[in-house]
Every structure is written in structure tokens, then in C-alpha cells.
Image (cartoon, rainbow, N blue to C red):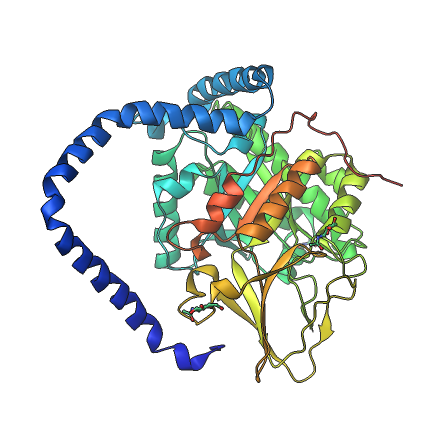
Length: 459
Ligand SMILES: *[C@@H]1O[C@H](CO)[C@@H](O)[C@H](O)[C@H]1NC(C)=O
Ligand SMILES: *[C@@H]1O[C@H](CO)[C@@H](O)[C@H](O)[C@H]1NC(C)=O
Ligand SMILES: *[C@@H]1O[C@H](CO)[C@@H](O)[C@H](O)[C@H]1NC(C)=O
């Protein structure tokens, strides 16, 4: 799996050398302690001023253009903050909520920055991360035999931890559970197949919500078949009714949230218009466009129509509701050993047959360096707007990944096309500085367009 195995023992040594160099610098600077203290004092006293200034600059930069814009966006947002503090029904977690909630800029116009947090990852969760999100979704609860379960002690504990941290960090952050997984399509098919089984499942969801006091559910059913769609739609409708009832019973101001995973294949007979009456948003599974070939994982363009642009255009034109869609971005890269370079500068032909190549393998963004991927080798492919590393070898290595640059392109795409938001798979695969999350969270999605203005030319 190591692209440059000979480096593997060097990497930690290099880090240590840097640290010792820094320490010896500190010792030499001993004579300067007094001036330093004075400098620190000045810094400390000017901090509040600098803070206010930086806040102002951030707001001004974010709202850029005109002052009128600034005011227009600012007033509703402060109103929104005060109402939402009142709303959330079961009030116990709001008691310590005296500080003002910070949210990503997209929240100002009701757009979404959604982070998956996964049972299968090991990283912790910080307040800082939570403040960069509008929704956090836990992967996964399982729908086994019609009963929602958190499988095992660790999964349960991690979910509880996420929930309490999220409640503590913000009163506006939505906490959701994703039910299902890539392997649960057959189970789902059975679960929704008749009224009796749907009833059992809906009851189980409701009792899960009563017990856990969360804001929403994602139905993670990646491949419903044509013959499932009708009963799937009935299920969502019945779930919505059950949620509405629960909301009334609990005197909860905000509706419960329902989101669905939707595959990227656009020739798919899923009439989302039917669903959208009952669903708050759709997470388009906009990665892994070609699992069996070597090439970019989530191209915005190119690939003879198999790309994010075509997928989003298809769904948005069909439903007329861009605000209900999120694109998904991945915080792990995908790589192959021994493949040909798939990308050409100006060609639409962006995938290569796998032939003798080994892979695909996954590597988390947080592990790239320790797996000997050199981030300075990352190149950008202009046609697909994706980032990649190509090592000519032998053996050759091809890695496709999201980095700051490709994510900024996707942010811009989502803003330009008035799409409802971005979902990250998963925030715990990011590095400890939250490099990727910061880019996505800072997306300037509030462009002033009406909620459902369509930015595509639909046939
Ligand atoms: C409903 O579906 C469940 C699960 O597939 C099955 O066990 C049950 O027999 C079905 N009931 C009816 C009345 O068809
Ligand atoms: C990464 O690549 C750059 C230039 O290609 C090189 O200067 C640097 O030493 C490399 N870093 C590591 C850790 O191999
Ligand atoms: C990149 O592609 C855009 C069109 O998508 C084009 O306008 C631009 O000139 C290209 N840049 C380079 C460096 O090829």
C-alpha cells in the first residue's frame, strides 16, 4: 500500500529533527525574554480589539459586495438564532446554552453543511468541528428485522457521546441518525414490502426517537429496485405522519427531519418529486462514479456525462427543487497500483480499464502523510476539477482525492447552481486541523437567489 516504501522509516525522524531545531532556536533567544514579555503584554491587551476587527472583516468578506446585502442577510439571521433557541422542544439540553451559537455561513440562508460521523472511525469529536456544521449524522444504526439497533456497546457509546457533545456545542445543530448502510438494501426491501412490516419499522423509529431525543433520520438505502419504489414511497409517507404526530404530542416546534441517500446513476426510476413532499433533503451519493475502472472518484465534469454536473442537473430539473439536494464529498482518497494514467488534459475520456492494476484502496486524508503520500505531489485536473497524485513508477500509483482546491471548486459549483448543501463522508477522516472541513464549512452558499431558482438549462 505504500507508494514510496523506502521513505517509511524516514518520515518520523524528519518530524523529530524539526522539533529539536525549534527547541535550540528557543534557547538562543533567551536574551530576548524581556522584550518578548513586553510584546506579549501588548498583544494581550490588543486582543479584544483585534478580535472585533477580525469578526468585522469576516462578516464583510463573507457578505462581500454591498452594505445593503450585508444588512439584508444579517438581520434575518439574528432573528433566526433567537427563535431557534426558543424552539427545540425537550428543553433539558438547552439549559446550559447561554453562549451564542456559531454556525457556518451557509446556515444564514438555510443551506446545509452536513457531516457524517462514523462508528467505524476512531477520531474524537470537538466543539470546533461541531460549530462548522448545520447537521451531524451518525453512521449507522441498523434496521435489523424491523427494529432500529445500535450494534454493540462501542457503537452505542460513540453515538451517545456525539449526541451530548452536539447538544452542548450548539442549540441549532441538527443531530441525525443514518439507518441502513451499503449492505442493507435487501433488508430494506423486505421492511417496506407490506403495511404490516412498515408499521413495525415506523413504530421502532418512533420509539428510537422518543428514547434518544434527536432531530432527524437518514434512510441509507443505496439501491432500491424499481419494484421497491412504490412501497418505499408509502413508507416515507407513513414515517412523516408518525413524525408529525410525535411532534404534536411532544409540543416540539421544529419538524423532524427526513433525508434520503440517492444514487448518482441518473437513469434511475426514482421519482424524487413524489418523495420530496415528505423529505427534507436528499444526499446524492456523488462519489465513486466508476468503481470498476481507474480514474477520478467524483468529477464535476467530463467522463462522457458520468459526472456530478449531469447528475445534479438531472435530479434538479426533474424535481424543480435545488434546495432539497446536497452533493457528497469524500474525505478519503482512492488509489491503484500499477494502473495507466487515466487523465488527459483536455479529453473527456477520464477512466482507464483496470487491467493488471491492484485496487481500489482507500486512504483517509488524515493518514496520507504517514502512508507516504507527499501532498506537494498533488496535481489538479482542469477538465474534471479533481485533484490527484500520479507516480510514474514502476510501479505506478494513481490516487484520486479531494483537497482544498478541489473542494473549493465544489463549493463554488454548489453556490453557482443554487444547490441546498454539501455532505461530508466523513468528518473524522479529516486531519486534526480539520483542513478539509474548514474549506467545506466556509463555502459561501448564500448568493441571494430564491430558494428554488434553477440554474440549469432544463430540456
Ligand atoms: C410482510 O413482510 C414481512 C417481511 O418480508 C413478511 O415476513 C410478512 O409475511 C409479510 N406480511 C404480509 C401480510 O404479507
Ligand atoms: C515531497 O516532494 C517535494 C517536491 O516534490 C520534495 O521537495 C519533498 O522533500 C518531498 N517530501 C517528502 C516528505 O518526501
Ligand atoms: C481550465 O478550464 C477552463 C474551462 O473550464 C478554461 O477556461 C481555462 O482556461 C482552463 N485553464 C487551464 C490552465 O487550462
